[in-house]
Amino acid sequence: MLRTLRTQVKWILVFFLLCFVLAIPLMYGVGGGKSSRSGNEDYAVAEIDGKKLMRSQLLRSVQDYVERSGIKDVTSTDLPMIRQMVLDQMVVQEALVKEVKALGITPSKEELDRAVSGIEDQFPTKEAFMQYLQETGITMDALREQLKTQLSQQMLLEEASAAAKVNDEELQGLYDSVKDFVFTVPEGFEVLAAEFSSQEAADKAYEELSSGTSWDVVLEGFSSSDLTGSTGSEKPAFLKKDSLPENLAFIASMDDGQYAEPVEVASDDFIVVYRKSAKDREVTSFEDAREQLQSMVLNQKRQELQRTFLDEISEKVEVKILDPEIFPAEEEAVEVVSEDNASGDRESEE
Image 1 (tube, one colour):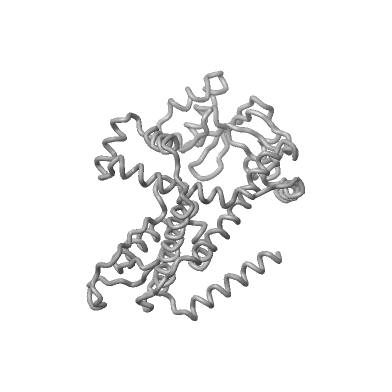
Image 2 (cartoon, rainbow, N blue to C red):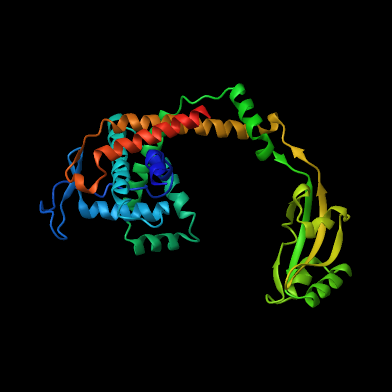
């Protein structure tokens, strides 16, 4: 898993740049730190375009990366590669900062105002928003500066992928390959179902429903100990006809609008079913799916162009490793890249 993340690290950063908070801010500074590498004393472990990355700052970023990526059971063997991933992300971030500055890309005041409003709208009131900023120690100026950085880099990436084009042949090819599981709704049934912990409770519900009392009203009359699960009247479950469980096969022979008598599906588990409607197999036509297909292909092409662009600008950033002991050995890095390339070649062939 770590090796897969290693090859995708630059695109992971692009994804987080589209969120409110940047994936990994540059937490390293210029100068500072003692040169001693003993005990718990801090020292510079690398330089990124002359800016020192301190050991303490790297450790904080590694912890943030592990938590955000959901990596579990990290071992001492994994740590060098994770540190390298974090360093790579910092290099990409530095490359983006330099490129934005070189090209003079900056959002307008109106774009910044809209971004701030978009965040503010996530809170119930303006006062709640301001209170949140105060509690987290973020000033409005700092927020706007952070958003300015984010939007500038997003504009840069959008410009880098603006050349992405899609043709009908590509759309048709994608449609043919995913039609059966993306654009096809199989034959089946919309049903309401309620599970009860006893035969008595299920029988009572069935009698009340059969007499004409509405689904929601009947279910509201049962405690959570009696009613163990149910669908809402406006959110029926969909069951495929060709994959109905054996103990629910009777649904296929029911009429629409009919309740089935309680069925025991397991020990202390009785179910009452209402067949709302039968659905024929439906296939969305190519023309109706065109807009969605175009979005899928275009997004993929833009991602590829952005990955290539990030590779190119990252090569302009000078990286100097000051403590090679905490990063993967050079031969290990070469081995990982070789295996990843081989894997990519195999995927291409497939």
